[in-house]
Image (cartoon, one colour):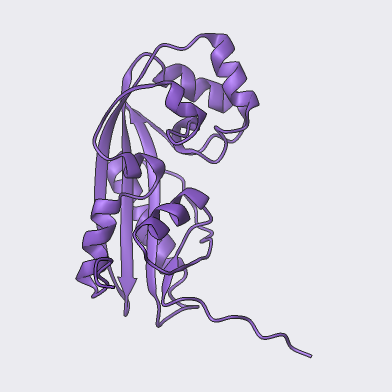
Length: 198
């Protein structure tokens, strides 16, 4: 006997990130979160901004065949420090390397968001400057032991323990968390979904 599978909401968030789900819920947008499995590797010569936008678009497009009638939101966040672009660390050693580079310096956090409707994708990018205080090796080790750096671009979460390291933020707090709400709201209104219209 086949079990019925609930139909997804009209809006689909192409992400498994609980932070992005929380942020979209903050806007009052009912949605279903479905992870999009894509290749997130940076292409040769690709800027951080271009990478974040491409990944956001690709996530939305990856679900469009299965859900052709949905409004699909894709988002991705990368961290850039000078010429280095950081995604999510694959292990503790990589997390330590990322945090070592970011500590005591200012880096950029770039979040791309894309909305796909009826085969047409529109996207926007938000860039924020984050200054991290200098960190002792013991602090980095303890932070990695907490498990929080994993699954986070740049190996830290500003909404968690990572806030202890962030000295200054210029830009969008929600974008650093993973979903730029100002840009997301503008894109939603562009496709006829106004979070303010009850």
